[in-house]
Amino acid sequence: MTKDPLRAAFFDVDETLITTKSMISFLAFHWDREGRDPADLTAARATLGGRLRAGVPREQVNREYYRLLRGTREADLEESGGRWFARERLRGLFHPPVRDALRRHARAGDLTVLVSGSFAACLAPISRSVGADLLVCTTPEVVDGVLTGEVAGRPMIGEAKAQATRRIMTALRLAPEECFAYGDDASDLPLLTGVGHPVVVGTDPTLTSHVHRPHWTRLPGASPTGALVTVA
Image (cartoon, rainbow, N blue to C red; front, side, top):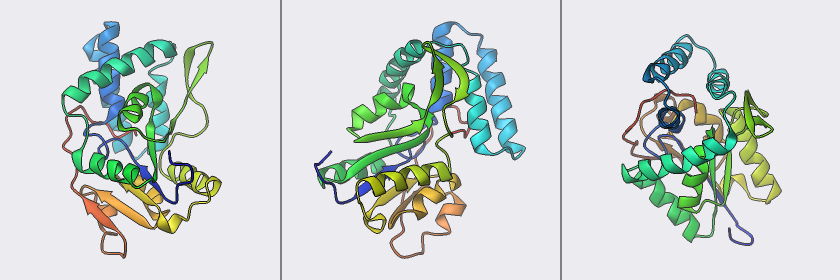
């Protein structure tokens, strides 16, 4: 990070900076390493997807995802995260237009921040790879090195993303109207409207309905490569 950045650029991760949904892709990888029955993943995806289709708020479904990891050692998740990232990077994990944008912001001396409802086990390797200055994400509750299945604080979704970015801009005395944000989903709208230069990634109708406004721009959407359930 530059000593005194004048601007920040905030990046959603799943299907914005990367081409897949990290949480489900990671879960499949981790459970496979543990020797879990593939039917467990099928059932988990069906349950989470069904809850979303039934109109359960994404924040609640995000919490339910972490309950699938109750009793898992944090160290085991971190190890799986590194291995998962190494595999996915070879498969084309990053979405080139957004990764290129992040690089441009970094070269310009902007603060670069990843903001995601996913968690550090799989996001930390991504953040290190792109050289992001900060990673803001959902934090699973851990007791004695083991996940309880609950979340510490709020999942980093929707308005929580906007609140986190406002705190960063305030702490660093950055003018929101000079800052950028990148997102692909309707739930990213609070994040995007909190800065002066919102960038819509893809074709979400809620977001694209705003593209005609001054200072809004758009980038092509990512091409998903993994199993998708929208919980991040």
